[in-house]
Length: 115
Length: 514
Image 1 (cartoon, each protein chain N blue to C red):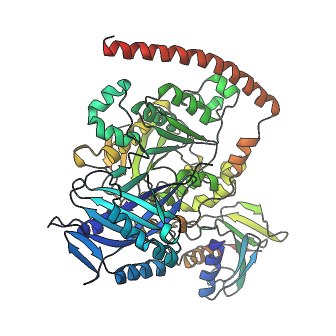
Image 2 (image 1 turned 45 degrees about the vertical axis):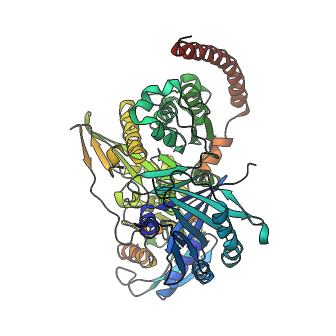
Image 3 (image 1 turned 180 degrees about the vertical axis):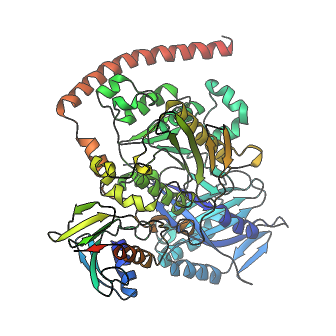
């Protein structure tokens, strides 16, 4: 799966820890803004085999997070997790795209509420 | 399983670089090397010429003919090996025109480096000849034998994707089709040579919907010999307001759309030896993509993001021009229509890609892959203005969109007055105006940077649940009913075909004045 490898390598080069769980990758994201600022949050996603041409779509978060706009779905990561349909707004698929995805996730977490 | 066919392709930019070296003003022969990458389809492998490796001082000699030092062949092979590409040997015939056969001295020169090229690069040597009088290319692949017994197979065509699509055909492997009396008016529009070249293009229509089926008929009537149609979908009653050639019986039987295409092709073909391939598949499936790579031109008649993503990928990576288009209707919420637009564009090397044009959003591709776009609950949850919810369609506008795509095709392959395809166009129903969409790829666009990647492309395919389900979901009763009705129809069609043949013979005899 070259796309998953590239996704993980891109995030590793940014200093983030990743863990593969089946077809999903869980990334430990440091959150700079919002209610979870200053903490490390596990974020799961579905990088495709042709990442970075195509971005991951789903955002898997622990149940305590609520994203504005709704759309909570059961997550393949199991109990305690939910997944949210959140597309990247301006994806172009250039190399080094892992940082684009990270910025997208950080902006989502900045607007999230935490139970 | 038929043996693999070969072809060669290059972008206009690569051809220009090669011509600057090979096409000498003093009329002498010239030679050089280049590198190539494979693009492997179901029945055809295409050598994509990538990078010229021009001679340094003393590496080749021009003396009416041209010859090279072994150090040049060795250096070029090393360059190809370092790039993990194959080696191409090119030479010119300044007085030649059309497809060039391989004479004894030229064959010996290529044979002398065929083993070196294969051993150093792992890929067979590709030989190419430029005919200086008309700019035709010919090519062969040294794919057989070893040692002194190395032999070549000729390619069937060489295509160059410049301001328009120019293809040189090997008349032995792809014979010039005989003009048919039924094609007289068509041929009178552009002459027998253009007709022969157009008719030999292998053309795929991806998507047998409201736009695709009109295109299928037009291509068949124009005399294109090899037409492929790919679609996994079935006819439904809701399609009948716009699906060309579809009947209520097709909807009742939930016939595959490719069966409607097959019927249209059978009735409309004017080619003497038509060859129609119908694929009940999606371009998004690995086997679907493999089939796409056998074609010279693809019509993209799909409005979904994933197939557009696949076709956008091959348009650049495999140098297969894709003619894309689509409809957007804007109904007023209170009733009435605000406007309707249809767009048309050719995407391939030297032209903006479908992402940069805005024809699909890569962020939607993964949604289609996981089945969300076929999930009514997911679609219902999307905002009303979301493009993914749009499903309006009108027969008359489908015909307009099909016409726009066909006009792009004609400009691409006929190039009236030497002018190729016009770039992306947008047509507005409200104003009845066509406007050029002035857009270019962004600097770091990964598609425009992937020209000639061939088999190295990031694989855009995957398991396609909707296609699999469509192929297997029919209850046994419906399958039986379809088979029974199909048998009756074939009997009736056989009788009609016999009458048609008799009418054709009568008409031809009349034309001859018998």
